[in-house]
Length: 386
Image (cartoon, rainbow, N blue to C red; front, side):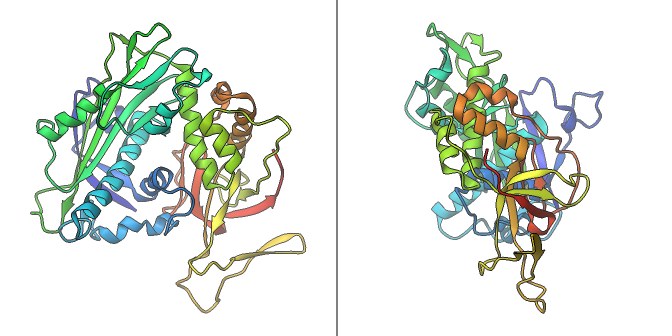
């Protein structure tokens, strides 16, 4: 399922090819299409600690708030009744759209929440680089990384009220980048590229001519020299990104090690469940993870004579889902275990998966190796330790 949203860019000297009308012309398209399953994937990675209320991307909980049309438009006059709830809900979806946009069109793969980065600023793994708060007030939401070398900052917003590059709110969001500085070992400030991605959601009560719009701009943090390649900082972002994924697949020790940067003893082993994907083009691809059952909590599969049999909860019912799988590619998981024992510097060994292959509209596979989709597409094949 796809939804369409209007696109407005500011201060992008070079438009990414995926956003150009034609590759040879440095001009952006007027609208972009959003894969709702992939949008849910980013939302889940960003907001849910363990189990979301509706883990199936085909039933993304925010879909209930959208009108059944091709454009991204909110039912009624917003996301709820109370002001605080409406603001929270719109910003929640705005953050997911920020991650989706940076991932799809600016090649950003890894995201770490700013508070986690600041909490880790004194760890020896920084090798001289420090990320510090330089003023009171809100800071950018994320420290992001394309890979272990290229790092950026990002701020996400979502609202149903007016947004423009020239209004006071946008000016206040730019100031958030002044409240975080990156210092080298000599205390000099290094400027870091940043992105503001703000979404204005159109509602059912707005005129049809008013479209939901995504506003993207690329300010930078203070500093006389560009940060350039920053493998220590990039490796830390990768570790923090996977710390949250490890928590979701019930690997608390692995998660805490990646989050804190404190290694675990080499004799510590990580037991896991390994599953194989059952359809091309990923047939035989192995993932470490598990599943969320239907709301009744009934297991839709059982082991029989060494094999796995999927058992529908009720053969007479067609409206009961079989469950949703979430996991991470086995090769990625192996490197994460090595990072937990030896440190963030091994992040450069984390492989990235190709993610341009369409498989199913209710499934999403990202470059970071995380996958979410129907349980029936996966089969458990073993319980090794790593």
